[in-house]
Length: 228
Image 1 (spheres, one colour):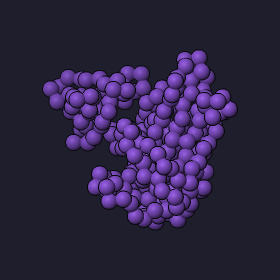
Image 2 (cartoon, rainbow, N blue to C red):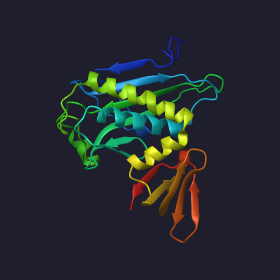
Image 3 (cartoon, helix red, strand yellow):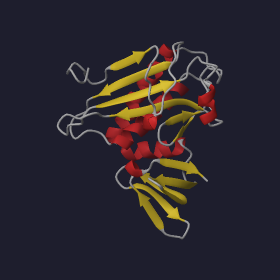
Image 4 (tube, rainbow, N blue to C red):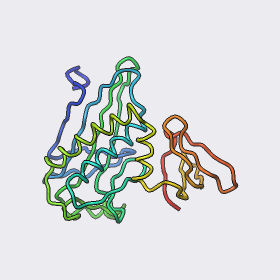
Protein backbone atom coordinates (compact mmCIF):
# COMPACT_ATOMS: atom_id res chain seq x y z
CA UNK A 1 0.00 0.00 0.00
CA UNK A 2 2.88 2.37 0.76
CA UNK A 3 4.61 1.45 -2.48
CA UNK A 4 1.59 2.09 -4.69
CA UNK A 5 0.53 5.23 -2.83
CA UNK A 6 -2.80 3.95 -1.49
CA UNK A 7 -1.80 3.90 2.20
CA UNK A 8 -3.28 6.46 4.57
CA UNK A 9 -2.25 7.45 8.08
CA UNK A 10 -3.63 5.06 10.67
CA UNK A 11 -4.35 2.17 8.32
CA UNK A 12 -4.31 -1.12 10.24
CA UNK A 13 -3.37 -4.37 8.54
CA UNK A 14 -4.12 -7.59 10.44
CA UNK A 15 -3.03 -11.11 9.52
CA UNK A 16 -4.52 -14.36 10.78
CA UNK A 17 -1.08 -15.96 10.25
CA UNK A 18 2.31 -15.01 8.80
CA UNK A 19 4.68 -17.05 6.68
CA UNK A 20 7.55 -14.59 7.04
CA UNK A 21 6.95 -12.85 10.36
CA UNK A 22 10.01 -10.96 11.56
CA UNK A 23 11.19 -9.66 14.86
CA UNK A 24 14.10 -7.44 15.80
CA UNK A 25 17.45 -8.03 14.05
CA UNK A 26 15.74 -10.20 11.46
CA UNK A 27 14.73 -12.88 13.92
CA UNK A 28 11.76 -15.04 12.94
CA UNK A 29 8.47 -14.36 14.71
CA UNK A 30 6.46 -17.56 15.15
CA UNK A 31 3.11 -16.71 13.57
CA UNK A 32 0.88 -19.77 13.13
CA UNK A 33 -2.89 -19.51 12.59
CA UNK A 34 -5.08 -19.96 15.61
CA UNK A 35 -6.19 -16.69 17.14
CA UNK A 36 -3.03 -14.74 17.98
CA UNK A 37 -2.64 -11.09 16.98
CA UNK A 38 -0.35 -9.98 14.14
CA UNK A 39 -0.89 -6.36 13.15
CA UNK A 40 0.82 -3.45 11.42
CA UNK A 41 -0.18 0.20 11.61
CA UNK A 42 0.78 2.72 8.91
CA UNK A 43 2.00 6.06 10.27
CA UNK A 44 2.35 9.05 7.91
CA UNK A 45 3.19 11.98 10.21
CA UNK A 46 4.05 15.48 8.99
CA UNK A 47 7.70 16.22 8.21
CA UNK A 48 10.22 15.99 9.78
CA UNK A 49 8.71 12.78 11.14
CA UNK A 50 9.06 10.95 14.43
CA UNK A 51 12.06 9.94 16.51
CA UNK A 52 12.57 6.22 15.62
CA UNK A 53 13.59 5.16 19.14
CA UNK A 54 10.81 7.23 20.69
CA UNK A 55 8.36 5.64 18.27
CA UNK A 56 9.42 2.14 19.33
CA UNK A 57 9.03 3.16 22.98
CA UNK A 58 5.58 4.62 22.29
CA UNK A 59 4.38 1.51 20.46
CA UNK A 60 5.70 -0.71 23.26
CA UNK A 61 3.83 1.35 25.85
CA UNK A 62 0.70 1.33 23.71
CA UNK A 63 0.76 -2.45 23.39
CA UNK A 64 1.43 -2.93 27.12
CA UNK A 65 -1.34 -0.56 28.22
CA UNK A 66 -3.76 -1.96 25.68
CA UNK A 67 -3.25 -5.51 26.91
CA UNK A 68 -3.58 -4.42 30.54
CA UNK A 69 -6.96 -2.93 29.64
CA UNK A 70 -8.17 -6.52 29.25
CA UNK A 71 -7.69 -6.96 33.02
CA UNK A 72 -6.07 -9.60 35.16
CA UNK A 73 -2.48 -9.14 34.00
CA UNK A 74 0.42 -6.92 35.10
CA UNK A 75 3.05 -6.38 32.43
CA UNK A 76 6.37 -4.62 31.96
CA UNK A 77 8.72 -3.65 29.14
CA UNK A 78 12.10 -5.04 28.21
CA UNK A 79 14.40 -2.84 26.14
CA UNK A 80 13.88 -2.10 23.40
CA UNK A 81 10.70 -3.74 22.17
CA UNK A 82 9.38 -6.62 24.29
CA UNK A 83 6.30 -6.79 26.52
CA UNK A 84 6.79 -9.37 29.27
CA UNK A 85 4.81 -10.78 32.18
CA UNK A 86 5.73 -10.59 35.87
CA UNK A 87 8.13 -13.52 35.46
CA UNK A 88 9.86 -11.99 32.45
CA UNK A 89 8.30 -14.28 29.84
CA UNK A 90 7.72 -12.61 26.47
CA UNK A 91 4.08 -11.93 25.68
CA UNK A 92 4.37 -9.47 22.80
CA UNK A 93 6.95 -7.87 20.54
CA UNK A 94 7.16 -4.62 18.60
CA UNK A 95 8.97 -3.80 15.37
CA UNK A 96 8.99 -0.30 13.84
CA UNK A 97 10.36 0.13 10.33
CA UNK A 98 10.70 2.78 7.67
CA UNK A 99 11.69 1.89 4.13
CA UNK A 100 13.01 4.44 1.68
CA UNK A 101 12.36 7.28 4.11
CA UNK A 102 12.02 10.66 2.41
CA UNK A 103 12.48 13.71 4.67
CA UNK A 104 9.58 15.45 2.94
CA UNK A 105 7.24 12.45 3.30
CA UNK A 106 8.16 10.37 6.38
CA UNK A 107 6.42 7.05 6.79
CA UNK A 108 6.62 4.18 9.26
CA UNK A 109 5.09 0.77 9.80
CA UNK A 110 4.55 -0.10 13.46
CA UNK A 111 4.16 -3.85 13.72
CA UNK A 112 3.28 -5.83 16.83
CA UNK A 113 2.65 -9.46 17.59
CA UNK A 114 0.80 -10.71 20.66
CA UNK A 115 0.50 -14.28 21.86
CA UNK A 116 -3.21 -14.40 22.65
CA UNK A 117 -4.61 -17.93 22.71
CA UNK A 118 -1.60 -20.22 22.28
CA UNK A 119 -0.59 -22.50 25.12
CA UNK A 120 2.22 -24.33 23.30
CA UNK A 121 5.28 -22.95 21.51
CA UNK A 122 8.05 -24.37 19.30
CA UNK A 123 10.89 -25.96 21.34
CA UNK A 124 13.50 -23.82 19.57
CA UNK A 125 11.64 -20.70 20.69
CA UNK A 126 11.46 -21.85 24.30
CA UNK A 127 15.18 -22.64 24.23
CA UNK A 128 15.89 -19.01 23.37
CA UNK A 129 13.80 -17.46 26.15
CA UNK A 130 10.64 -17.91 28.29
CA UNK A 131 7.46 -17.21 26.32
CA UNK A 132 3.87 -16.80 27.44
CA UNK A 133 0.42 -15.82 26.13
CA UNK A 134 -2.67 -14.08 27.43
CA UNK A 135 -4.27 -17.50 27.77
CA UNK A 136 -1.38 -18.71 29.93
CA UNK A 137 -1.76 -15.50 31.97
CA UNK A 138 -5.39 -16.58 32.52
CA UNK A 139 -6.78 -13.69 30.48
CA UNK A 140 -9.76 -14.88 28.45
CA UNK A 141 -9.96 -12.82 25.28
CA UNK A 142 -9.45 -12.97 21.53
CA UNK A 143 -7.31 -11.17 18.97
CA UNK A 144 -10.06 -8.71 18.04
CA UNK A 145 -10.54 -7.47 21.60
CA UNK A 146 -6.80 -7.29 22.15
CA UNK A 147 -6.41 -5.20 18.99
CA UNK A 148 -9.16 -2.80 20.06
CA UNK A 149 -7.45 -2.12 23.37
CA UNK A 150 -4.01 -1.73 21.82
CA UNK A 151 -5.20 0.75 19.17
CA UNK A 152 -6.80 3.00 21.79
CA UNK A 153 -3.64 3.08 23.89
CA UNK A 154 -1.35 3.31 20.87
CA UNK A 155 -3.04 6.52 19.80
CA UNK A 156 -2.58 7.94 23.29
CA UNK A 157 1.10 6.94 23.42
CA UNK A 158 1.78 8.47 20.01
CA UNK A 159 0.18 11.65 21.31
CA UNK A 160 2.62 11.59 24.22
CA UNK A 161 5.52 11.21 21.80
CA UNK A 162 4.43 14.31 19.89
CA UNK A 163 3.43 16.60 22.78
CA UNK A 164 5.32 15.42 25.87
CA UNK A 165 8.24 13.11 24.98
CA UNK A 166 9.77 13.62 28.43
CA UNK A 167 6.65 12.06 29.98
CA UNK A 168 6.84 9.19 27.50
CA UNK A 169 10.45 8.54 28.50
CA UNK A 170 9.56 8.68 32.19
CA UNK A 171 6.70 6.23 31.67
CA UNK A 172 8.96 3.89 29.71
CA UNK A 173 11.63 3.96 32.42
CA UNK A 174 8.99 3.17 35.04
CA UNK A 175 7.36 0.32 33.12
CA UNK A 176 10.75 -1.15 32.21
CA UNK A 177 11.89 -1.01 35.85
CA UNK A 178 15.00 0.99 34.97
CA UNK A 179 14.84 3.92 37.38
CA UNK A 180 18.01 4.11 39.47
CA UNK A 181 18.99 0.57 38.50
CA UNK A 182 22.44 -0.86 37.83
CA UNK A 183 22.52 -1.68 34.12
CA UNK A 184 24.75 -3.04 31.40
CA UNK A 185 24.50 -1.09 28.15
CA UNK A 186 25.52 -2.74 24.90
CA UNK A 187 26.71 -0.48 22.10
CA UNK A 188 28.05 -2.44 19.17
CA UNK A 189 30.68 -4.78 20.60
CA UNK A 190 31.13 -2.63 23.72
CA UNK A 191 29.57 -3.24 27.12
CA UNK A 192 29.31 -0.49 29.73
CA UNK A 193 28.04 -0.72 33.30
CA UNK A 194 26.57 1.92 35.56
CA UNK A 195 23.47 3.24 37.28
CA UNK A 196 20.77 4.88 35.19
CA UNK A 197 20.53 8.62 35.79
CA UNK A 198 18.22 9.61 32.96
CA UNK A 199 16.74 8.61 29.61
CA UNK A 200 15.98 11.38 27.13
CA UNK A 201 15.21 11.22 23.41
CA UNK A 202 17.50 14.15 22.60
CA UNK A 203 20.34 13.56 25.05
CA UNK A 204 20.28 9.79 25.22
CA UNK A 205 20.79 7.37 28.07
CA UNK A 206 22.97 8.71 30.90
CA UNK A 207 24.74 6.35 33.29
CA UNK A 208 26.68 7.02 36.45
CA UNK A 209 29.80 5.01 35.65
CA UNK A 210 31.47 2.69 38.14
CA UNK A 211 34.50 5.00 38.17
CA UNK A 212 32.37 7.88 39.44
CA UNK A 213 31.96 9.70 36.13
CA UNK A 214 29.05 9.90 33.75
CA UNK A 215 28.60 8.32 30.33
CA UNK A 216 26.02 9.27 27.72
CA UNK A 217 24.83 6.89 25.01
CA UNK A 218 22.67 8.04 22.07
CA UNK A 219 19.58 5.83 22.15
CA UNK A 220 19.91 4.79 18.51
CA UNK A 221 23.28 3.23 19.37
CA UNK A 222 22.01 1.19 22.33
CA UNK A 223 21.42 -2.36 21.07
CA UNK A 224 21.04 -3.97 24.48
CA UNK A 225 20.12 -2.96 28.02
CA UNK A 226 19.90 -5.34 30.96
CA UNK A 227 19.86 -5.30 34.74
CA UNK A 228 22.99 -6.40 36.62
